[in-house]
Image (spheres, rainbow, N blue to C red):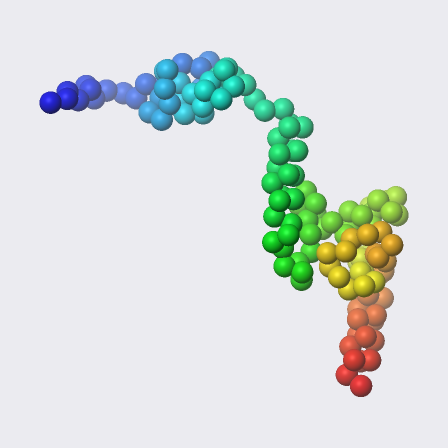
Amino acid sequence: MRRRAAAGPPRICRFPGCTESTEKGGHGLCGKHAQRLRRYGSPDYVTPPDARRARNREAQLRHIDTVKPTTYRKFFGRHEHRVVAEAALGRPLRPDEQVHHLDENKQNNAPENLVVLSAREHRALHAAKRRKQSC
């Protein structure tokens, strides 16, 4: 029969400054540092921010085809059409400004398809379109 280890206080990761338990790791390291040692050969390896951002962006782009056509695309947490409009204008959009898609396709964020309007102008444009359709 296998003997149980003597119960005692949990062992702490041997990596300097880490206070995590070695319960999920190996080689006297916590889970995070043991995984870094297995993957990269060093427990203190940290992925460079550029590589991390690129990998995250690639993962987002892989799912673009699964987005509903009625959904606005996001670019690093911001609506992509607003980012494109700001780049075309050369300045940030004011809070009262809205971006209108000329072809009404929310996925088409080409600069020539976007028009920056005040909130009032944008509402009036869509109201006029609705009135025209109901006739």
